[in-house]
Image 1 (cartoon, rainbow, N blue to C red):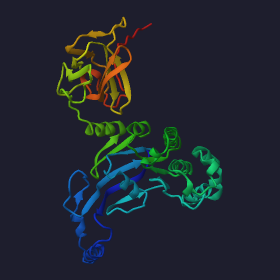
Image 2: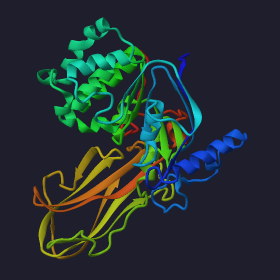
Image 3: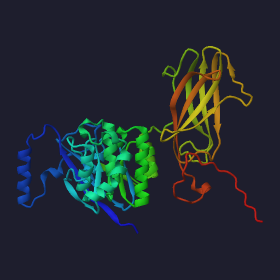
Image 4: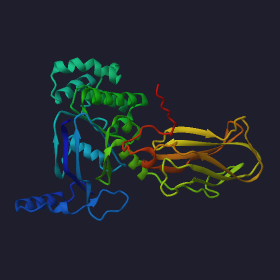
Length: 423
């Protein structure tokens, strides 16, 4: 059984809003006076929750409130939440760059953190000098660092500038070297914030692969914050969802990610009225909807459905309608054009028209899907794109698909026929 390397118990972090230092001496004296008398800190009883959408009534706010979780050795934990949910504050506490107001943390192993551009590097020192400095901070000998040096420089791709002071690096170069140092100097625990987004796509892919490699191959523990849900699902096995500074959910990464995406998606089938930007000189969409034939309240993967589109043709047109489906991670899943088998288009006169696209049951997997509607004249001229204008969330049908309660991979899950023959 894997041992627990991080244990967070009742962590809370309170900040005071307003000008720095205003009234702080009086508040500190008040805290000390209560402590001397054996009383509870009076400011722990006040403060608003960390909700940016409402105006608070207190000058104190709880960036984090009563956070509890454990991380096992070799786990990759994804921390998910909107901006301001408390993700970075939590990582700063775990990295010991700030202290919690209440609660305790137990960490077993060396920790390397990559929280923001500039973390852990001295700007006046060269890249080479900063590699040795960071290794020394992690408790490594000079010989140990030398053995890793070439590998770090090669991974970072900044060999030409390795003897240049890092204050002259671009943000991308900075992050490349900082991540290479953090990933290669063998910390038991690696903490990475959204900082990887500064790098280019090629480096992000390389960095994600390295994190997966050190986790699976070397048993290192990783805490990873990102708004890229696809990246989180690729490398993480567990997840925590933070909402307004509190843990709303923790568990398998796919379940946590699905819940987060559902919270940020209007799951109601949308109707489009006239004049709502979905019109041009030849076409105007009147209405679009998803009609669930079997179950309109709680769509299951075993349900069939129809996408119904009503539109007005303002000028005669040879038309092809295409339905484009995206996953909840906004990855392009498929496109289904209305072009007939013989290649013919709809030749439409002016007036009101309705078209239906029938989708069979047992095709989609569980989760959220978005539908875009494209109106194309002839074969290639795009007239109108109603981008991700419809959405739907499918739930599991345990009765029909068996009692397995785990996550089925993939964006689609067709119910194909299987035949077993004995020879």
